[in-house]
Length: 143
Image 1 (cartoon, rainbow, N blue to C red):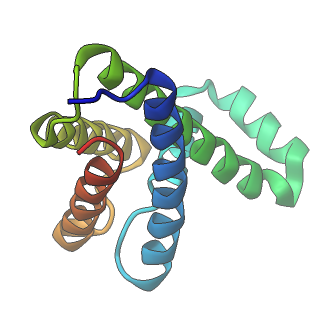
Image 2: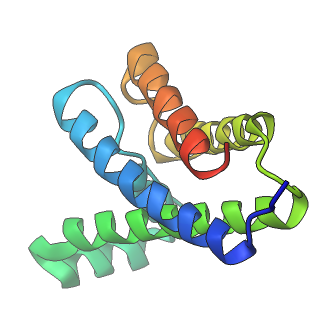
């Protein structure tokens, strides 16, 4: 059986979360689903000392939200690339069970980020949709 190269894993790991960011944004606009990259940015703001966050947001003005969403999205995409690279280093060939485990780890990290950012958003429906999107992500990039 032929194995995937690490560069293939990184490219797949970066492209699939970029697609996932678009899907999360679309579903967040249509139904009670949290936009995870924005939750990442909110968590960073909450963990940053108040004066620094306030000064940064005030200095950026109306473009602050766009920059914050972009930063959260880039962190999410880079994390996807790292996740796939680590998976490629550990697994000799793609196994869906490992992809499922990776999706569950990302879902757990999402819950932690949402709790830091201000609570679980979207309720059970939002959490279920997020889990389905993460499973699809695992299937596309790892399985």
